Length: 384
Image (tube, rainbow, N blue to C red; front, side, top):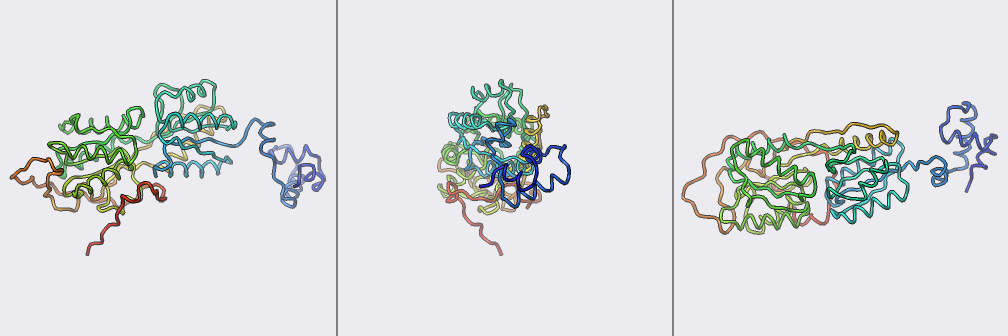
């Protein structure tokens, strides 16, 4: 394997000149630069990244710790981060926390030991001592999607409050009066923020959110299934369920079908975090879509600023509501009471107002499938 001395001999220059060319130093003449680059190509020379990092104190490597690699939202986010990092000349090492604080800290520790230049983190809780120590040590860090309140670190995230208000208005227009939510963990900022946004949007419309209609999940499909089953066992089950992430929505859909019920005829279903699969479920699922690609790119750019010694501002991008048919749009307005324990009623449901126009736009997310949730999906029937 060729070394830097071989390149210098091939180009007819000193080793120092080769080093300056490889480090893009402006003091090298155009002729010398051309000869060095030609020699590099001829000899297929590859610089020793470890040795270079010891000299420059830079590895050109970023760390990314995501909350759950099986969640299509985070898969898409990781892809956007990797693509933007590559355009800026960085490589990315990814760690999957699997929504576990101890695994998150393991990845953070490992990445810091590898002397990464900067770290992107979507925290799984609000109090990781290791992350706080890294912040105090002036490690370049940017929070993405989630954050730790009170920690002075730039945050790149989406604001879903307006989209949740649009969802609540959509549900009420369709005649739903007993909405429930499958919330994420209260230990995460997104878990608490989404349930607060849902409660506030309902309150603005004069609709209460009883404690029985709030179920705590963990951003995993099984918790969505479990909470939905509890909702369906209530004496008066909800007539609409809003899952605070896509995997919990798929779990809820599985539970509803397991009871022999239909969406939306028996119960409406909506989700936070849109994914491509939602257009293939039966019916397609209404969802709040985050600008995943833009978030990933903005997070990398903010981290590059931190690495350069600057303090970039936090970035907040708006989410949007994607209306499909899982809440009732495009279906007859009559509904049965969901769940085996629902009280009988002889009075028909009041007619729902004309539903809003459907938005066929697909979300800005990855199209990769996950074996963990694929059995829940069912191909949409074609209608003549």
